[in-house]
Length: 101
Image (tube, rainbow, N blue to C red; front, side, top):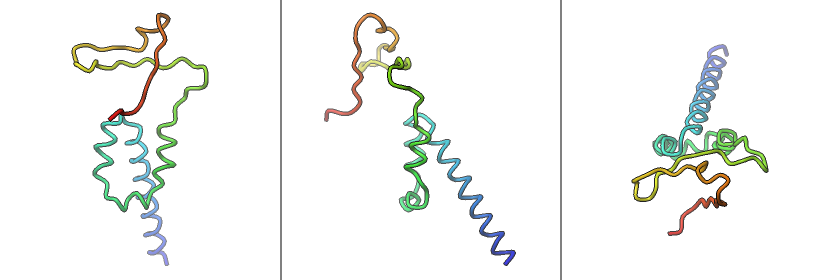
C-alpha cells in the first residue's frame, strides 16, 4: 500500500511539473511556443488541460478603453521597422489579425 501511494504521489508531482512546463512554454512568444508544442506527441493533448492552460497563460491585462500596448514590426520588405506609438495622435490605426490567402 505504501509503494502504491508513493507511485501515485510521484506521478502526480510529475504531471504537475509537466503542466507547469507547458504553462511557461505557452507564455513564450508564438514562434518559440509553436516550435516546442510541435514536438509533443498527439496523445499528450488528451492527458493535459491545454485549453484551460492556454486561456490562463495568454490572458491579457487590457480592459475596454485602455490604449493598445506599443509594439514594433518589420515592414514586408524588411528594410525598416514600424511602431504603433509612431501613429499615436496623428491618424487612426486599424489592426487586422488573420490571413487573406
